[in-house]
Structures are given as structure tokens and as C-alpha cells.
Image (cartoon, rainbow, N blue to C red; front, top):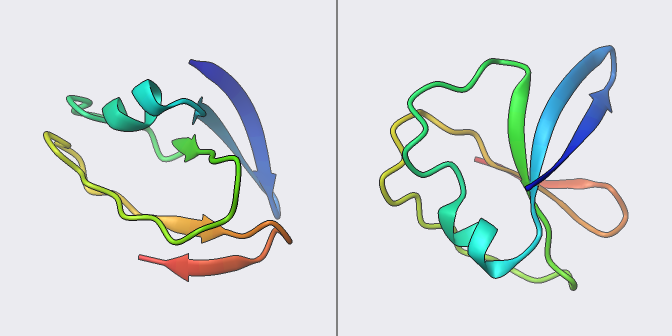
Amino acid sequence: MKKVIVNIGNKTYNCQIAENEEDRKKGLMGIDYLPDDEGMLFVWDKEDTREMWMKDTLIPLDQIAINDDDEVVLVY
């Protein structure tokens, strides 16, 4: 999986990019620890409403949806 550095305000995050169906299905499944400065970005070709299934995810997660205009449209 590709990795990217994301800067939000004065914070920097190291993120993996789940850009294909295989990566999106696996997500963070089986991960038992994720540092505060790491995450995963799920990328789709077009903007749409998505459902996420957290099968076998062992850590608490926050979800943030960002639209094509780089606006946060959902925090869960």
C-alpha cells in the first residue's frame, strides 16, 4: 500500500492509502495498535455515500469523510 504524509493544521499524520478494492476490504483488519499520528485514507474514483464494515478491527476508530472540495462532511 502507498503511504502519504498528511498535514492538518500543525499536526502531521503518516497514512496508508487504500485506493483499490482489495486494500479497502482489508482496511485496518487485524491491526492491534495504531499510533496517534498514523491512519488510513480510503480513496474512491467518485464522490458517493459509502458504508464501512469494520470486520475484525481490534482498535477503536474515528471516521472522517472529506468531499471533492476538501470539506469535512462527516465525523463518526
